[in-house]
Length: 306
Picture 1 (cartoon, rainbow, N blue to C red):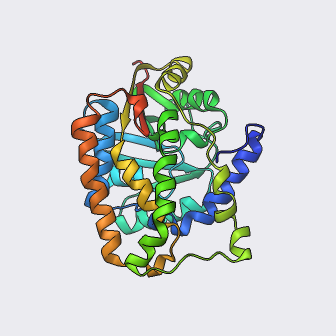
Picture 2 (cartoon, helix red, strand yellow):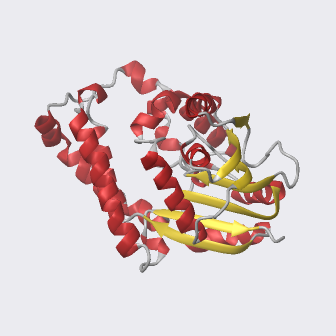
């Protein structure tokens, strides 16, 4: 369930800050975020799809919006596609987790706690503005895109991936339901204990606020229109993941019903490897031929004229 249509921007920002602060410590494990070879391969594939090519030289100065724990920018930097990373987020907790991972990966990073609609950077400061699964959390997208345009250098690019399509968001309800129905039998099969939340846990921000953090889902035309209003050119919107997200939501919905420490390692390995395998069907067979609005995720790129 997304945030209420009557929710104010201040309420949305407060909810997102509190939720992501509370979730920061367990976020990577919950969403299977990888900072090794698989993670780098995933983010490079997303950039390739969004732009239509993979750059043959690294971006100089890059700003990530809503960087979270660093899945997008840190993997790109570790893979040599970004030289200088600035990570911004409304959540101090997420940036703290990102900084720890950056230190472990030996990736230098500058962090800034700020809102996407009011960026504390000079005009024309970056060659790339990017984000993953962030636009749907931002209350005032026109104001945010105007800021992206302002801080971008002439000839620079924006790349945003992992944004929920309106059709895909509705489609995800089916595998979520299937996973919930199958969960009791799945737990018996793998001998996992049911997850039981205490009243205190139910009151915690990570549990109680998750239904309110999402604000938007998109059509490709809406994303194109936002970039044009902000002054961008060469807008490109592509779809990503159909079968993979159907399978992914089934497994996530089942896993959400079990005590994490009782889910065996062999299952987690199977779930991750099978997701990557199904992902190949999307990228090789479906994504090149079907309209972007049919997929669960949308990928957006656009440029600022030189």
